[in-house]
Length: 206
Image 1 (cartoon, rainbow, N blue to C red):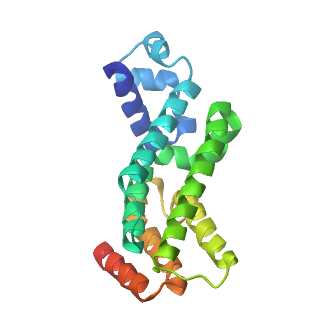
Image 2: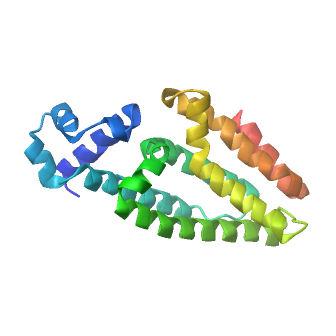
């Protein structure tokens, strides 16, 4: 990606986050950047192309977090989720417009299915490791599935709930609430050292 493409993507992300992907057009973006529309479409022929590039950047940045922060404890797991939530805030327009994007952008829809399979698989591995290292203990496979499903749903949809209860502009201030909720999801299944990790994490959030 060259400097001009990076400039376009960064400004598009700012405008999309502020107003919503659906409400910012390519001509509006070009005018904001001080570019001719033809120069903008030289790099991104359509808005779908631009949004798809943003979605790829989001996926790649999340992947880097997963690679460089392996989970060895419940505390590690929760701290990794702080970075994932913060990264989600950076790309919040994608999360808040997900249903629309899935319906309108076939490349995003196709890529989403693959990414979600990988993410859920990684989440199952993390939870299984926490069980093996005795940070959590499940009474049944259904309990384990519940934790995996609850975490997956929260990661994808806390943005929408936060906007419905507040506004697009104060998502960052609400993030701590949902991170606390994530930690408490583990409490019924946490062992003694798991509880210690939960309390340590919650104390650091305050």
